[in-house]
View 1: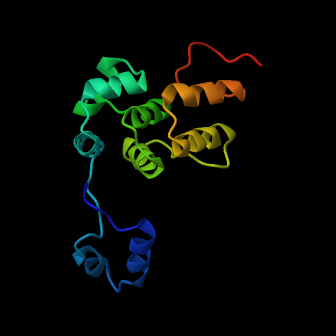
View 2: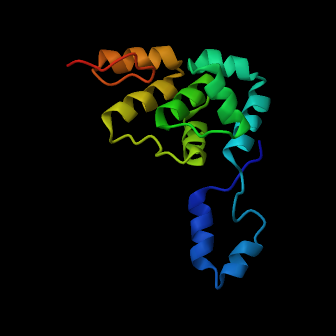
Length: 148
């Protein structure tokens, strides 16, 4: 996967530019990566097949295939589950979520903090769900409403 410049660096360059043309003339000023491209790159990078992602994410195979083909976009929890199925680190998870058009994980949100912690610890989807359940939060692979 091609290394990209940090958003903060690009923002500094944008704000320092005398015109938009100057900013756009820089080779790596904008990124045109799509969710489908990013997912394909991750599969290739990790040496995985879509079936591996289905197993690791616990998402329905049709849902995964539709997302990978660009027929549909994942909702927030499905994007998280997809990232977990792909074995993404936190940065890759956040990027996948941005490309999917959903809000990224936010450490000030209790449920998100548990998910972030689990990703950083290398937990799989089931283990993160166990932590969410144990701490009274809605699981990713929800089978019904959580009763408190």
